[in-house]
Length: 143
Image 1 (tube, one colour):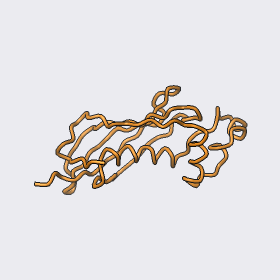
Image 2 (cartoon, rainbow, N blue to C red; image 1 turned 120 degrees about the vertical axis):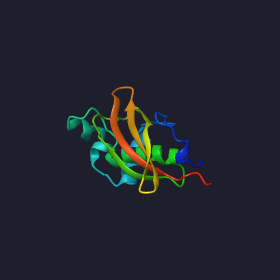
Image 3 (cartoon, helix red, strand yellow; image 1 turned 90 degrees about the vertical axis):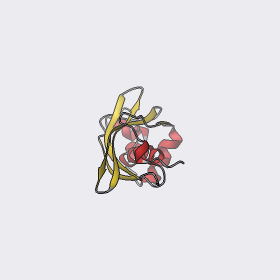
């Protein structure tokens, strides 16, 4: 993973996103990995009996995917200062979750190189299901 420097960031720049296939294996693995054992995330009958269309990813899985987008882009010396998102629609078993983002603005904040970003997770069924925003601090390029 290469380091991104604040000076190299441009407003409007898109982040290299990634896709996650929400297979049954991945859906079941998210449960112990996030310590969210509520059955709507791994038991199809339970989820459907509660009015959900199928099992769906949980909050911690979604947060981790958005954080991965940011840290992969920022590099090892980058720091996620702020992260906020809304889970408006489902990411269900069988969906492909596309995680993407773009730079909104860059500025200096308390001696740090700050970057505000718009981030989101989408799928073909729902479009943008999880919109969010983040601020990442990046190092300055060495002199």
